[in-house]
Length: 305
Image (cartoon, rainbow, N blue to C red; front, side, top):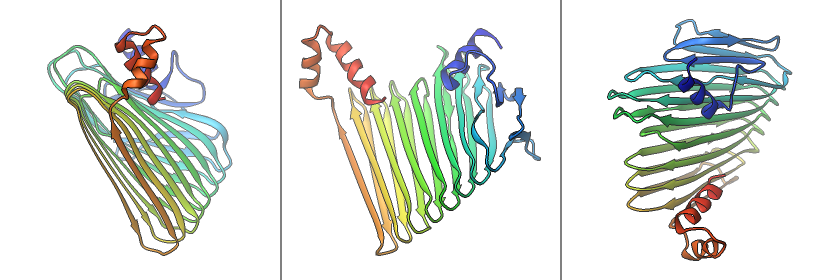
């Protein structure tokens, strides 16, 4: 890989070199590096449109890296990746997409990830999106995550988009069986004329299932953000969704939290807050020697951690 691709790989997956363990690295529309282990097998889907990742039951403390990097202007692709996590497994899956566009044509990656989480399994899923390049072509990413959680399983999702993505529509849907728990933390920043939409749809189908969906975002310049979160409680369950956003300059933000209770035993809560940075916060940091611009950056950085 060249220097640009290496920089993208580091930004979205924290990799300075080829990782140990199971991995598949996709660059400019093709798989360039792949490795399976005794417990984790990565194979090409039969339709050749993506991957199947099979994690054996009982696999503990192993990781899978599946980053996508694009440095060819005008490239567009749709990739389907399916993850089968066996019962009692405990794994970390690190995905993400980085696009460098130095040309005039739009570059686009749509990644559809489906998770089948077995009984008592634990999954941490990390997904980072990043864009770079000084070309006029847009950098477009439309990730979709579909989660099916079996009894007493646990999944933590940490999704980050901080820089360089011109347009994104992020979709996440999940259905949970008895005792399953889903925790989602989304961190997002838009600037310039960027547009970002986040759509969550979580169905709590099993008794004592639970979900906590939280989004923290910053909208700057003339960018636009839309956050839609719908939690459906169909039985005795607990659900919480929250959008906390900072709005700056001429940006616009819409937050649409929605709850549906189909059982008297469903306990559901939603929260939404949009506001500017408080003046006293900036003043306090300026008394410590920071400029106003530095104070704003410090506040934004801390908010998105």
